[in-house]
Amino acid sequence: MPVRHHLPTIELRPGEVALIGAGPAAADLITVRGARLLQQCDVIVHDSLVDPSLYTDLGCELIDVGKRAGNHKMPQPEINELLVRLAKQGRRVVRLKGGDPFVLGRGSEEALFLHEHAIAVYVIPGVTSAVAAAELAGIPVTHRGVADAFTVISAHPRAEDSPFTIPSFHPKQTIILLMGVSSLPSWRNGFVAAGYPEDLPVAFITWAGWPQQRVVRSTLGRCLAISDQIQAPTVSVLGYVAALDAKNTSATS
Image 1: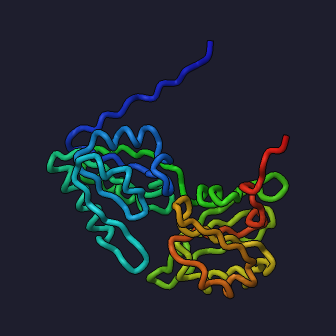
Image 2: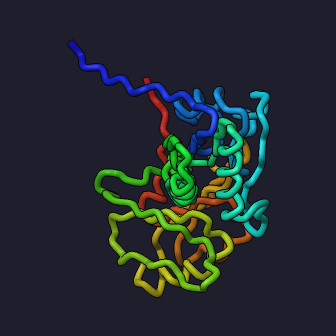
């Protein structure tokens, strides 16, 4: 007989928080567990890059704390305090974040802060945009014979002006950069200086999964020339897989 694994059903109770990854863009990319918990809450604290159709008809209080480049509706410490305050009011709280909350989403900071204040928090994984953006553009982050590893990096400009560590070049490695539009000249020059070939394919996926999705392909050496075509939110993919397009395949009879 087949073995069936039954995951325990989570019931969100007053004073508890569910930290849910909404996945990238389309509402139906959220997990079943995440969608179920959305039906149980009475307040949703949500990011900007979350499909509004996930929450607009639920009849609960909505608090937009979304962060976009140069526009933070609420600083992270205030978001942490807000979650604690809502939970201590006896609310059933959902913190809804785009992608996966623990992949460059600061979800772990929020979860640890809630733990420090003795508040129960459930972490619900989501489909990370780091992989899904490339996939929605037809780019596999790994492909036999082309790439057998990938690295995800935050390219967001740092206030302390300390650049991220650039991995040593390996031809079978894919580099995925999040939040790197404004810092494109800096990281592009950094990769070239680190020995990455200038003919290395690069793909920029803007608004991945949304109706306005756009894919711009170039090379590391030429990408600055097309920087005016790239706007946030964008996921950047460096590596030989960026030249592949698995979407342009069709079955023939």
